[in-house]
Amino acid sequence: MIRQTRITVSLLVLSVLAGSTILLGAEVRVPAFTAYLAPNVRGARVSAKVGITGWTGRDLKVLWYDQIKTPGKLSCAVQLRLD
Image (cartoon, rainbow, N blue to C red):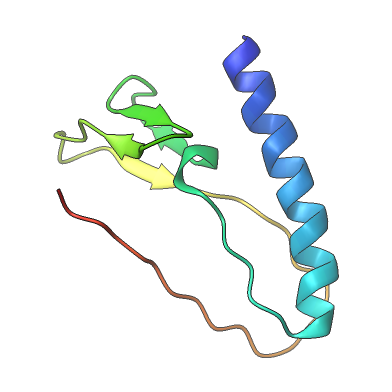
């Protein structure tokens, strides 16, 4: 429950930061440890220090949610480190 609360708080803070930063046209980086895992929340290990590890299931998805209220151009990129 504490971990879920931390993730919720982290996402809330990131959403606020993303909303204010997008208005300025700046880059927003969302750390891997703020993601949701689905359908099995124990399908990988999520850590603030090393990100997401132990991801072996083909059905596992790593998800992030945010709400963007200002219309405009949006560019997205994903940065991966394969160890």
